[in-house]
Length: 333
Image 1 (cartoon, helix red, strand yellow):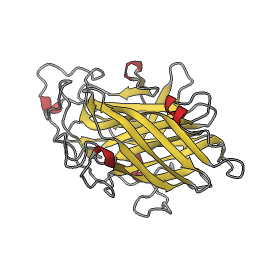
Image 2 (cartoon, one colour; image 1 turned 180 degrees about the vertical axis):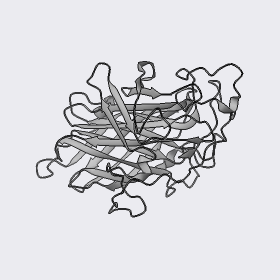
Image 3 (cartoon, helix red, strand yellow; image 1 turned 90 degrees about the horizontal axis):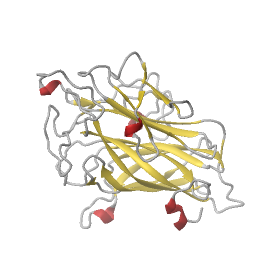
Image 4 (cartoon, helix red, strand yellow; image 1 turned 90 degrees about the vertical axis):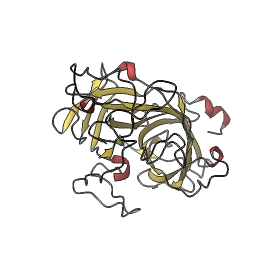
């Protein structure tokens, strides 16, 4: 559970208003049920679903099926989203962003509004990921990320290739700031503004991930980031070099601001969050994962936010596959 930030009002600028503070600071996340220890980080155990707690947040599991008509998404574990422990979210095509499929939940006009995004990779890699975040009300927000893989995973064989592989595509995040109200149920007339829920604002961008399966390492960048509702440009994020588990194809690493965006600032070595995910398919043809940022507007809060947070999702195909990203033209797949 986290504290909510300010609302975004008007497309030209950010205003702090409404019932939320600016923004929300974290409360301790509820412990996972019988969490298994993460051998790489005793302070960040994995949940029963295998997601590091820093990425899972308040979320237990997402069940996402893009192949039904309409696609379906259900969520386990996020508090106060709709109904019992497993909530079935409603499909919202108007909120789809850059290939990520949107769903929402809101039980009544004074209950929290939740936005969720899910995506499955192409090329039979069997990886998918999702993210869920509530808008603000009562000074807190809820949410987290999830990823999984079906079937086997085989990395590229460094004996026959270089082992260097690139993945590129789109990124979507949800932040603890109020965005548009297009999916909110209208509150009754005369309702005190302190009781009105907010709809979480979205961040869009591009992401490049580069993996070295000879050395079992991965790193990347999230760039062209902006808050969609206001076209507010955000700093690029560096996904720092971290190890790939050669058996499971999973990884967990730290994030920083891109140093080139802040000349003269000491951003190198300043941890602003975590990223993690899982490779899947033959020759690791796809990768899916999530991001949790504990800052997103830059060092020293140039946009005026304090305590800002973001949960984001990426689902990418390997460059050189039939549906790769245009940036792949500049890399050796």
